[in-house]
Length: 389
Image 1: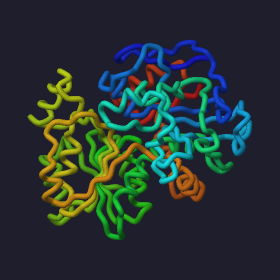
Image 2 (image 1 turned 120 degrees about the horizontal axis):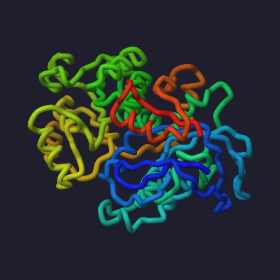
Image 3 (image 1 turned 90 degrees about the vertical axis):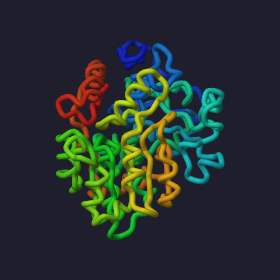
């Protein structure tokens, strides 16, 4: 089959690789019908996340049709159209039993690669370094899905492929981020980033009862999406003298009730702080550019909620004193998709959520390297490049 493979830093190629096979009785094989880029992919493409190997098939946000079923699978049938969360969960361990699916104890076969840094391993994830399991990714014609009865969700007839696709990762990540904020009627929620996850966090905040949502980004077309598709207020941080002061002015001096970081370790910014971060990251003296997260910490009102969805490694200049003295509550995680996908499918079926507008560019799998270039460099207003194998 054809698949998009990582062959080194910023070196992606579509190659012929072996077809996936049933390995365990609980596996299914999916014919991938749609798969999409994700901002977190850029971290290993750019070399900031280790343990990639030449020839690894990448991609973790996808949906497709079941074409082969292991003998132990009982709920998922051949021919089912399904969406699959990016993190792989067994459904039986303590963490899965407590809806902490991305922390599953049983789906990462390489715990020794995570334990030195994290202390404990997380769940496995498709196409996302060997530290996260070394599973083959979704940018391919076919993919093996373990624990299919737990990790495959049948898509209702009234939900399109393009709507279902983003329920694999962007929508549950953003929805989880809003859920972490404990939103109450009248709340103001600020979201850093208007990419896929940020836009979904903004929509989800409104679904959960926020009165106002403020989107922070630097790309006019993404801020326009936030206004047009979410009804968010917007701040272009390249034009604002200070994002923190602007947010204070917009909230009567108090600050947002909740702040969501949907940017992560490759945040852009302005001024000497951003220049310092870029130099240290380039020299590999730190993995993270933390401008967005630091702004969120500074801007959030006293006693407010901070939800961190961006992927991070090692950050310099982390303002712990601000968090402690302001009494902020922090919640963060990789997405627990198995908890949220059923709820999101209901929202989409009722017309309350439609993430399909994020598919700004659809192309064949053979064009995937060009799609990642467009996505990475925000060319032609690209929010998400979608590949149709």
